[in-house]
Image (tube, rainbow, N blue to C red; front, top):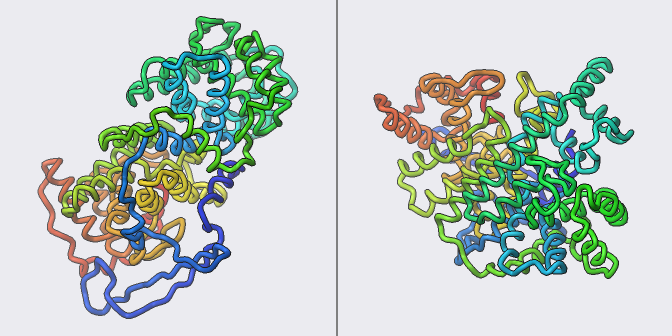
Length: 550
């Protein structure tokens, strides 16, 4: 099923649900197709905002005056925006990382955390879930179903005492484990989970924590922030993971992150009073008693929860988070932005073994195409970054879908078709990323209007968008998938030729073939003669479906 947080996130795409699409036909030349007797499809998309009709912004219609003259960006601006993607990995209520950051920083201020540690805590709170995608596949294998609801619910139950499982815990497992199987199979799997729980926790939590810490290290966040993420799931009494640390062996920043995470998880779904009640119950077992007293004191004084409700304005919450960053005036260099894009591409690709290095592969192919087409340096950079982050919305898709060895049903396809729009919604929260967001959101669109999510057509799609569509198709075909092995270059060219120029851009495809041929020492191929591809216009459904979920 499509969970509520994803629906909320998609709903934040301005006017998307109210699009009134009107398509007309005029005589002319379709871009990218040779010959005189062709038609150009002009798509006019109108969105009602209540104050009139506005054109739906596409990559081709993105106006130069909307491109920020000042493309400077701070670390907090980009990390706070991309933190929405991390909420997807845990099926958390939209804005979880931002609210956790506010709560944790208020607790730290009250506890008089030394000033030299506040920046480390700030980014540890925003990035605490950055390693969570790495264990999604394993969790799906264990439960035999969607990993995300169980990962979201795990914080509400005391999993350190499997021999004292509550009714709520048993009910949660019953609803999550092998949902399409019979009762006997469910009972057997749940029993097996109970027996192997600690071993599974060691493996999954260890993987998530270590990978998260490594990513913070690569981003230059410092050892204190990395260790806070590594020790997030340690418990005060030593019953946590991955190292069974206890009391003050656990880094102080990790202890603050754990309390903040708990407060938001419970308050967002069960209310503020329940979050405080459970926090006090777990004082001395899960949580540092001193930090619990600090949080309770702030709660009683009405100084804890401002901008920390899911019903509060997301813009106000994010603005409050940005106001806490002492270094927000420090602008990132281009190389630092690239490094962040690459790190989040790794987060996306880690979700499934079948997408390992997919985003980087798309970026490499797109960079080669853009360079071969002689785009300017700034446009090549734009293409590469959009390619790195094009699938960030795929963190919303269950691994039971991503790793499925078979045909997707209608409900699964509905979930898949949401991910480009979610990518756009996340990326456009960063001012200088607005054009990149539009391009990334179009990577499954096709020139003939057969793509998704908006069924755009050739006049809507810029050269940058077309490059990424071709690069994405190539990368997907060259990778293993649950239902097939990776294809060799000749097979890929054969399949993609059938989609050019009606679905994929001919110039971009030719540039791809030339680039890959040169890089791999293959004989270069002549540019495509479109007149020889007319017979391929009715490409088989099998060929089209291969690329529908790249």
